[in-house]
Image 1 (cartoon, helix red, strand yellow):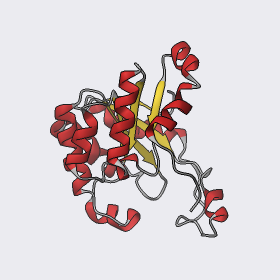
Image 2: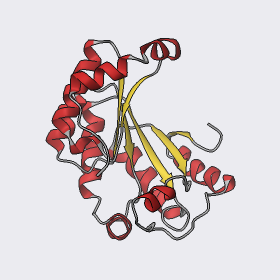
Image 3: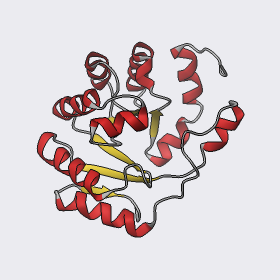
Image 4: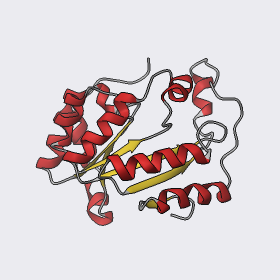
Amino acid sequence: MAGYQMSAAGLLERVLRDVVFYDQSGGGVTFSGGDPLCQPGFLREMLCLCRERGLHSAVDTSGQAPWEALEAVAQVTDLFLYDLKLMDGERHRRHTGAGNQLILDNLVELSRVHAEVIVRVPVIPGINDDLGNAGEAAAFLSKETRINRVALLAYHATGEAKYGRLGRSSPLPPTASPGRDRLLELARIYEAAGLKVTGPDA
């Protein structure tokens, strides 16, 4: 284990050191991880503190959490960045170790109670870069949710060095980033379903 414990007040103090940059850029604070919903009480406390200080907040999540935790956080979050990796439950379990029904259910519910949600799709060659998965995801988002924004994120290998530092091996074999043509092809599928896509040229 590497890291240190902090109180919400202590973390806010550190966040406020950069408030001049938030003011100039129009940015704010993004809570990521891991997944910040692993600590929903602390996350909500931090979000409340950010709101009190007028700081824009974003939560980057996989959606793999009890709905009650996500709902409580949604009340004090400005923007959600919500990962959507695979639509097929068995494929999702094979590559992530868990099913995706909770993730999909939570996304539907979140879209009903929160207007600012961007779905982020990490495009990984050989895992989820097929047109079939993109078509299923586009249909699901356009028909089952109120979400209209999708970001395609090209896979990169910058995280692989972390495995070495932890004495572990990467679960993925050496994988190249997806080509621009493939990203554009996937983007067209989402756009055809009426979704606004940021991706290869964003």
